[in-house]
Image (cartoon, rainbow, N blue to C red; front, top):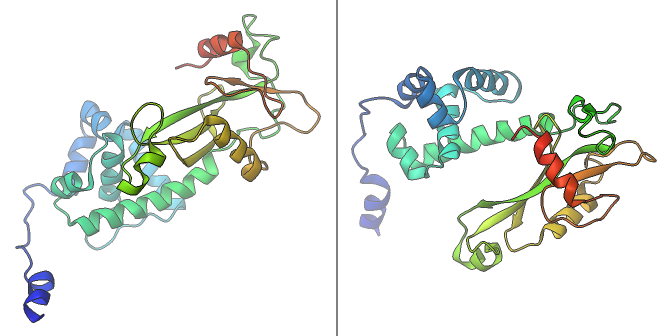
Length: 253
């Protein structure tokens, strides 16, 4: 029993000395426009702005052993590629526990940020978006308040949940529903449903559970979402094939 405890908790590997610290790598990467976008999927200005917002308003903090800049770089590097936790352990010369803990800390801050930014710019939808005022789209889109679609995000799940998360595409995923406005800003997102679930079940659950947050104008005003997927007509939503094609021309994809 004593030898087991010693081998498990006392016989540690030698402390690794990084030839280049994670912070140094993040700062070096930010200095290269191409490398910054490839590694973090955003420009240096966006990275620094996001860091400033998370530190100033959403609780992201530096600690004695890791700065908030390195923590954000680690988070974006894992999400952007994506990279595994073990790859992050090697790249940043950190323990698995540190990588997981810092990832969770940044994720908590980003989740708080999402609550404040994933919402309509004008919840009352009082005006028609300038993109829709073009003669090509008016009056057909005058009452359109956004575009809605579903997407399957690949995920790794325990063996017991593989069947539940395997959809028609043949891989494990989450079925995510998202709504965006005509400036390509997300205004509503529902995530977490396994990939085998039909789009309409996700949509109905969003209406039932989050109806107060689901984007819609004041009661009594007719409106519709332009559908980019196979959602069916429901809850005052109009889905027309020609509108789908026109919407793809409006959104700057």
